[in-house]
Image (cartoon, rainbow, N blue to C red):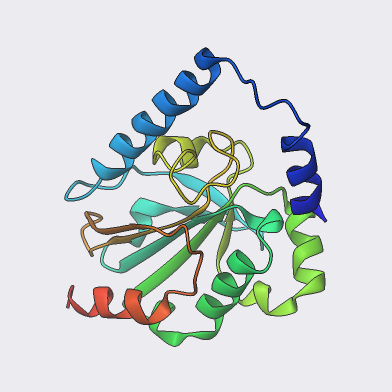
Length: 191
């Protein structure tokens, strides 16, 4: 329903957007893409976010483990993001003594609670709430090609950090597929 409402609102028949508005969106997309791509080979920006189950998670506290970050649109991204989140929660390769996976979405706790009530397997993933989108903004994921709401919401974006917190893999995925097999191979390269 949200996608239909977005589609209808976004297609009001006025295709004569000003060039300045388009330039602004393109400029923001370019800035975000540059910021995102510049993360590769560098230490990931530290953050602290609250998890859906109420824990404060600080990225730097996970040093010594490989970390997968999955930025996504959350509640509005059904079924693609929900399927990836559930797949992470079920797959021990992403949640063990040497690897942690953090799902970062822009929802409030109440919004995500609604999603979990509709698809209980979502609760098995480590979901962090970036409601103000500060972490998403810092990582440059709000205007990447996978974002369906350019400049305001992340899309379907992955990063893998080595045990020292250095970003070793980036993938923005406009196809919004479940990428466990590909990500598992990338994690194995870091052993």
